[in-house]
Amino acid sequence: MGCVKFGENWEQSAADMIIDATYEAYDDAGIEPREIQAAWIGTCQAGVRGTQLAVPLKLEYIPISRLENACATGTDAFRNACYGIAAGVYDIALVVGVEKTKDTGYSGLETTYSRHISQGTWLDPEVFVGMPAQFALAATRYFYRYGLSYQEGKTVLAKVSVKSHHNGTLSPKAHLRREITVEQVVSAPIIAWPLGLFDCCGVSDGAAVAILTNPELAKRFREDYVLVKGLGVACGASQAELQDDYDFTHFEETVVAAGLAYAEAGVKHPRKEIDLASVHDCFSITELINYEDLGFSPRGRAREDVDAGTFALDGELPVNTDGGLKCFGHPVGASGIRMIYEIYKQLQGKAEARQIKNATIGLTHNLGGLPGRFTCAVTVLGR
Image (tube, rainbow, N blue to C red; front, top):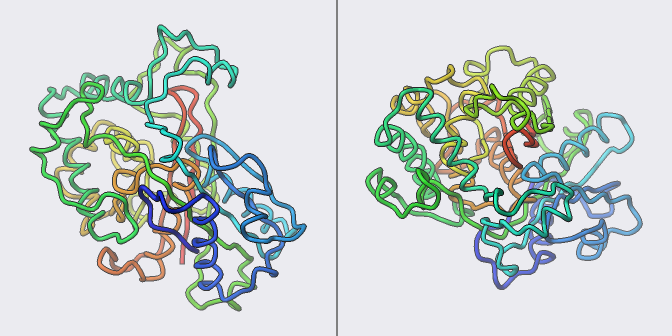
């Protein structure tokens, strides 16, 4: 695998980042570009077709598919390549996730009506709100359902962000690398009440790459190869908008996608069997709800695990060991592969200062869209 440093990469184009990440992956695998038989590129803004990968990498006449699936884009591209390998159609495949968002002026707060008309969602501009507001609604509902005062709920979310920022200081490729305190999070400017500045992930440029092969050939490349144990993707059909009893304190797409991945991987007790996870933390409340949807915490009890340090780097089940989206930002197409990169390094024992002990099974999770119409992708990896 390969990964560039995420951040405000003004001096690099999407093609530059693709080249840097891919050649790190080539070196890691010990192969030549001509050995790649097929490729997938996951991107929302940095390209519209397979040639966006073929041209910078000089991949001559191989099949290249471009995939976009909201925040699950990179992981879904990875999934498609995995099944191409598993089906025996290809022996060696390349997957690239890339996004160049800083140059576009994209802020992550888009609410323009035109974009949603073009996507066929036809949302009323007077009603539609951006992502911070959507997840702020989940936060207020979670606080209400589980009896948390504003101060109690905000403190729990602050501890999630503080944990991630600490891990980010240990990640050389992270965008934001400094410690923060609970007090800073609680008193930060509000973006969408109750979510403040430190509850929200940033906007970054980035690229990450994976090279896939079958288990028989893997031994040729390296002794510490990593296996893909399970994959799951689920897409909602606006159930949250159609059901008057939808609770808005869980995301059913995550529950379903995780179940699919767990079944493929043979995982029956996630909290006991998963050693670490990289979950989609676009907002601190998202990570908190993910703990419960993935089976790491009982419903309504994630607060207790956060207080106990369960998901800290030295905890029972470390989550977002590299700082997550909170510290890397969220260049949409790149995030999923970047998360897989972190699990890959942890399983190999090569995560340096943030390395956890005896990691054998890891999980990645991406969630994108709106409540009730999310796309979720879950991957289980193992030694």
